[in-house]
Amino acid sequence: MVVGQAATSPVRLINPLMGTDSTGGFSHGNEYPAIALPFPMNTWAPYTQPQRDSFFYQYASDKIRGIRQTHQPSPWINDYAQFSLMPVTGKLVVTDDDRASSFSHANEIVQPSYYSVQLDTWNAKAEVTPTERAARFRFTFNGTGDAYVILDAFDKGAAVQIIPKENKLIGTVRYHCGDVPNIYSSNYFVIVFDQPFTAHGVWSSANDIQANVDSLAGKRVGGLPAV
Image (tube, rainbow, N blue to C red; front, side, top):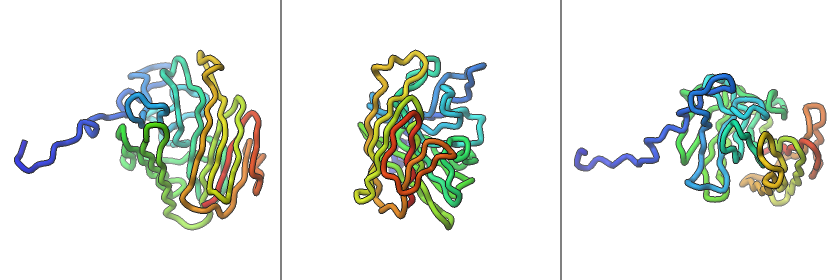
């Protein structure tokens, strides 16, 4: 070690992308890029594949569909109680197919304590860093026009309530899949923004977007504050 040179933190030596070049047909590790503290209550991860694909981050993909809170222990078991957030600009789109953005690994930073990606389709940047029980997000919109943050509570039963005066979304996710028992599927969340909403609404499909509606419960539920 050179005198005066700062030591590299061991966390910076970890590459969470190791083992992510996997599919259900062939595996190089069965991993996803877990952004979390050790032994966390929640883990955060970008996902490139449709919601039901348990190999939800595939290194060979060139699309990001959102950053999800995940509890998946293994793709062979699948996930439970997850939801995702995704910034979009201009045209309002909500489903994970429609909101998917092209990206490059050259513009992606992946560390256990920090994740960022440039979303080329939306000219926006998404960042997340974990805490013990939650996470901090930062969305940077570099273009002009309307900007939205899409909450997707997936399916199997969910509820969301938007509280515009408090810049807040609260809700429940009850998703479970694969071999995950239903008793472990409830997740209660609170999302607080540091900017006021200029508009808001809820959605359940691409054809069911309800502007200025504060709450929704059903099979698939989402929220969409405009910031």
